[in-house]
Image (cartoon, rainbow, N blue to C red; front, side):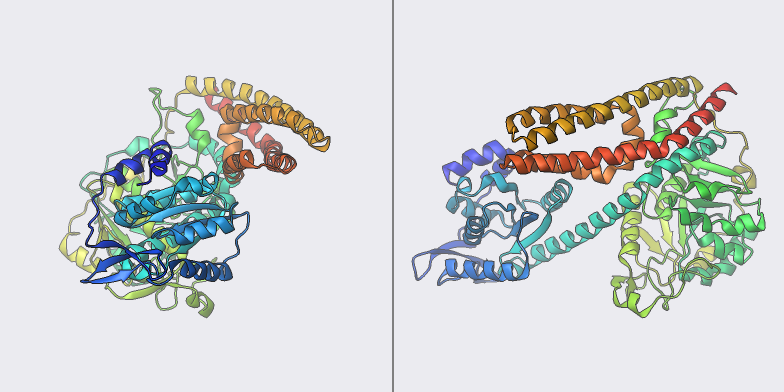
Length: 623
């Protein structure tokens, strides 16, 4: 390894240095060879033959061709972040960074042996290291996940991969896995960003409005934790295969063979077929979610209790005729701030998820169920259907256009079915929870549904014949759960209420000072007093720190602007690196200015809801 690289890696990537320093090169598998024009190439032994990573004639000209082809396909600008996958001896890395000296880049090498040759030939310090954001070598499979997750979390730039073409052949398995993982994470990140952007305000407003319901209903997690040991629960979703199981579910319900929990829209199919589950579960924060339980309200069905996540769309709970039980979700920063149990301990929360089935799966585990059976959990299309019958507020049939954009995944019969990116993300979320929950026994009884890792597929009629033979349901355990509300610690709530009122007043003062500093920065920039502006940036940063430490902001406003806050936080590093003082000032004014304007608008928007929530808290304390 070049001495400069030793110094650079020890200082900036000490863990990487330690790992590469311990690698032993297999000389007969990775050989440096002189080309005909006295450059160097590297050949790798693959299945008893050698394959060249670079041209064995003119690697430099080949690198120029690789870059030209890349530039024809991708637009390189100030918003680009290039990932070099496969470094070889670095010809293309040196040429590209010389041609685009201001473009952010990262280096990834799947082979430790090749990476050591790279470090022996390329001086990292001679690259534009101020733009080098990450270096990684795949010493173990986890290195890829860590590298990609860090990049996706830390940059708001457009990520583009420049791969060395030969790697797709020489390191085919690792190459395909990297690109598959990259595309999967990009889709997931975009989906999370879209979800956060769409619901960031609704989650908080719902939680504020629902606090009255939370304070007046039982917390099912607190009241019934572990109460259903050695029992079986059936989690019923609204996939098209639910139509096949109606009579099986009716038999199970009539004979008390298992507890039936419907999730999302499945309640409509069940009620349509005159089957009342033991509970309907709901967490969707959208205003449209009220349509899901509309059938219960219209029919005034009092026999079906609803278990709601505390950040669910507040309209869903209005005028609900049956009993209501709540569970605190991780999206609810309000309940987390104000509530403790009667002993003063933190309230257990259920992790929010892109599908109510995943959240309910957690709940059923917490309640102690020994076995959970999934029904109607298709997570894909079947016979051009997306949902079961009885759902009138959403389109059941799949269009040809939707089929054309669908993905292929493996089903429970080891065949292929079509699904959507959204369903696929839901499936992975369920798989993740199953993997994290110790000792949980989940059976998938969804005919023709997507295969769910961690579950065993058995048809529901076989489960009934084999192990659902005795009545186990005790209606009083759930349906007639004590109507008294859960007792939350009133002294703690009162103390938090006073603390929050002070934080609210403090937040208004911070906003004023923040705006004053922005105005001073604008005057300094317009007057070309850039050194004065630099001093004001420090004061602006101090105000942002005050925002980050203010309870009102932390509980209400920052969660309502989580996307914009992350964009601002991610941009600070690049703002500090901006060499043009005027451009830096303009970017500071735009980024910090837009952020505070959004926050001030949201404070005004939630003021009446905030006051209403405080009144409800005071009523609860006084009772």
